[in-house]
Image (cartoon, rainbow, N blue to C red; front, side, top):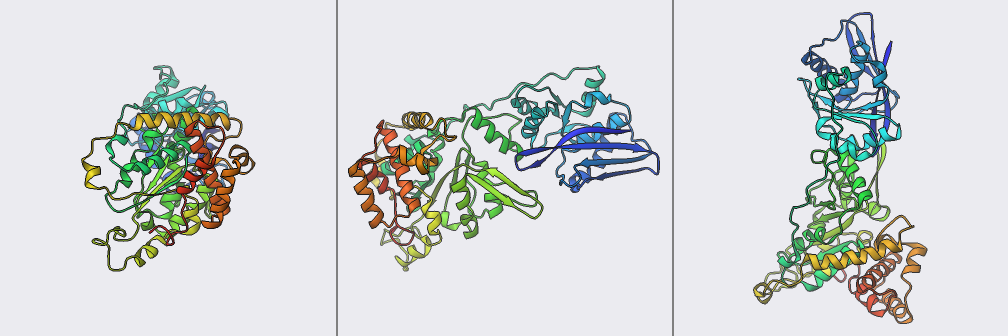
Length: 505
C-alpha cells in the first residue's frame, strides 16, 4: 500500500502541488528518494530517521521508496522533511490515512523531532486554500499561514505534538494572523537642514511613485534624504502587504511569520552582483528589486555598481517584473519598485569646488557619469542637484515642516491617483502609459508649447517626454489641480537633464 501526502514545489511565487508517495515493501533494507530531488531533499532521509527515533519510533527493516510526483519537476529545499515523515507514519499505520488526504504539509525536521521554519509557508498556504485543503507547518510560522484566509492550520512545534494531535491526546490551537509592531521611529525630514529643492523633489517622487537621482558632493545629505522617503509613503494596503509578504516568505525573511504594513526599503552595497540585484542563482531566488516590490530600492554610489547589474535594471523598471531564465528554470517575480539613486558628480566628488577638485576636472566628470548608460538614465524621472551645505545652512534652526506634514500631502495626492486609476490595475502616475496618460495629462496650449520647445532643446526621447508628463500630473495632484498648466510642465522639466556627461557638471 502506498501512502500519499501533499506538499508543494516553488517555481517563483507559484507553489505547485507535489504528491509525496511513500511505499514500505519487502526486500533488503534501504531508503530511496526519487523524483528529481536536490541534495537537501536527499539528505531528508537522515533527518527523518533521527526525528522518528526521537519520538520513540524506528523505521522498519524494509525497502522504503519515496517518489515525489510529478517526477520531472525539480524538488529543492528542506521543507520535504515533514511530508516524507508523515507519509512514513501513514505507511507504518501510526497515523490514519484519511486525515492526511485533506492536508498540505511542509517543514524541516531537527534531529530531536522539532519542526524548524522553512521559506515559502505563505505561498504554500495560498496553494492549500486553492486546493481546498488544510496546512501543516512549523509552529513559529502558524501566524504567517493564517493570513491565507479560511483554512485549517496545524502549527506544530515538533513531530510528537503533531502525532498527539492526530491521535487525539492533545489539540493544536488554530493560530491567529500576526502583525509586526509598527512603533519603530522613521527618520524625519526635520533632521535635514537646507536642501529645499531636494526635499521638494523627494515629495514629488513619493507622491507619484517616481524614480529619483540625487547628484552632489560627499556629505551633502543625499543618503539622508533617501532614507527619509519611506516615512513619506503611505502604508501598504491589505493586498499590497500580502504581495510583499509572499516575496519575503519565499525568501525566508518574514520575522516570526508576522506581516508588516511598512513599505520595503532595500539598500544593497555597490558590490552586489547581478543575481543579487535582479534575482537568480542556482535556485532562482528573488533579488533586491523583488524584495523592494511596492517599496524603495536605494542605490548609493550608483556608478560604482557593475555595468551588467545596472543594465539589468532596465527591464524591471519598465515592466515591473524580474524575469529569470535559466536552463533548469524560468521564473518571474514581481518588481514594481521605486528607484532612488545617489552619486557624486565625479570620482573625487568635488567637481564644483576648485580648491578640492582633482587635476582631471572637468574631464573626470564626463568619464564618471558615462558609467550610467543613456537608456538607464532616461528611465529616471527626476534628476536633482544636491549642493554642498554652507555654514549658514548648518547653524540655522531645524525646519518647522517635517515628514508628517509632507506625508499628509503625499497621502492626499496618492488618494487622488487611486481614485483616478481604480479600474485600471495600478495606483500611481508613474505607472500610467499610453492612452491613459494622454487622457489624464492633457495639457493646455501654453503647456503644450513649452513641452514642444523642451523636446527640441533638451533632445528628450519619447520615454523622457512621457515621464515629464507623469511628473507634471503628480505636481498638479500635489497642488490639488485638475488640469495641467505651464507651471506644472516647467517644474517637471526642471527635473530633467541631457544624457550623462553632457550637462550634469
